[in-house]
Structures are given as C-alpha cells and as structure tokens.
Length: 298
Image 1 (spheres, rainbow, N blue to C red):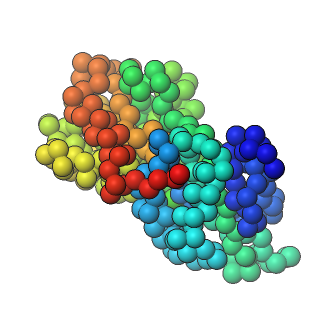
Image 2: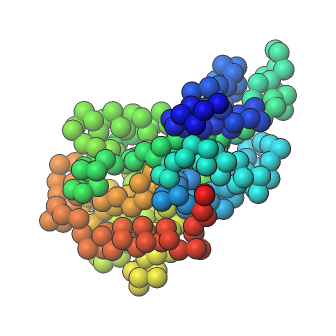
C-alpha cells in the first residue's frame, strides 16, 4: 500500500489498518440499525493530540455504561490512534474511536447476543465554524426543538442520536442562521449539534449543567477561565438570558472556542467578538502547547 492511499484518512477496523475508503461495517450492525453505539473524538493540532487521555477515559466510561466490551485497554487504544495519525501524515486531524453493539445471532433480538465492534479513524480536521464565521462570529438560532430528554437517552454518553439536532439545524438554515442550540423540557438552553454553549451574563460565564454532553472542550474552558480569574457558573441558562447576554461562544473538539455574534438576527452586545471570548480563544489554543494536555503524535 502506497502512502498516497492514506492521504484522505486512515482507519483501524477488523484489527487492521486500511485507507479510510476501504473501512466498512455490516449493514446488520445495530450501530447502524439502532444507533446502538458510543464514540469519542479527539483532535490533533500541530502534530499533537489534545487531551487524548481524557477522551479515551470518556469513551471507556460510555462503553461500560452501555455494557459494551472491546479487546483493547487504554494504552492499546492510544497506540491505535497514534498509528492511524502517523500513517495518514496529518498534522491537523479529526480522530474518532467508535464502539457499536455489533451483529446479533441470526433471529435474535437480544443485545447480549451481539459481539461488540471497535473501529477508529483519522481524517483531515474539519471545523464546526468556517474561517469567516470564526473571524466574524456565528449566527445562532434558538430552536424550539426540544433536546432528547436525558431520562430517555443519557447525553453524558456520547451517542449518535441526532434527529433532534438535525431538525434544529434545518430550522436554523431556513432562517439564514449558521447553527442552532436546542432547549430542554423547561425551555432552558442546553446544547447544539456537536457543541456546548457559554454566555457572559452580568460579568460571569454561565454554561448549562444538565441535559448535555460534558464536553472535554467545555471542561477545558472552565479550567482556563478559573486560571484567568473569570467566574463560571454551571447552572440552568434561560432563553432570555442567552438573548440578553453580553457575549456568547460555543465549545467543541471540532473547533475549540468559537464566537457567536448574532442570535436570531439580533446582535450579541455590539455585534463584535467580545474581550472575554477573545481571552478564552487565545488561552485555549495556547493550552495546546501545555504538556498537561498535549500528547505528540509523531
């Protein structure tokens, strides 16, 4: 296999490394048929993973809570992900690890009859926000679509249940907005497709505490804010508070900390990226050279 075969990405599947174009799963896998799967995503920036151990720990926790098992421990998972990145040659990469329920015995509907499947891949990095949106700020729609109730699907286990999020996105696009944030059953803001949200309210950063994925970038943001002497409250965030916020930003592995400068057509503050947001963006990317968080891929 030539190096050129891996330029679009590399996958580890069925215990072997293949070009991303050759990675396949069964159409009978319950990960596909039932969305019965968990996954995690870590990014590589300037040739180094960011918070790799934390992503692997969350992935293992999700599998345990879904009663899934694979034949790889944390160190072996780390080795697989590093091998994928090295073979791809990518220095800015989106790296995903996935566990699906697998295929049951013929005729069985018992999840205990499935052999859980693991695969991973590294592809070129992709952003939630494009270059213009990162420079000018995102236009955010507050959707009236309710996020799946956490009593039904636990959002702290990273999953592929995105029908509510996709509905929110289509509603945003119909209104010429860039993305959407959903609400919970009480009408509080919770999260968007692939991101957590922060609002500067009366000089304090507020981020939802329930009904969300506990994002690694969210956690990093809270830690860095504390280091900067910025107060953070993890609590309910009302729609009205978000509309009246001094500043807003979203956080994701797929882009870090990204500014929001409009909400449903109205400017956030003066419509420019605020000083607190910029401070957090700068601190976040600087943290990528911090050995506490960085794992070299090469």
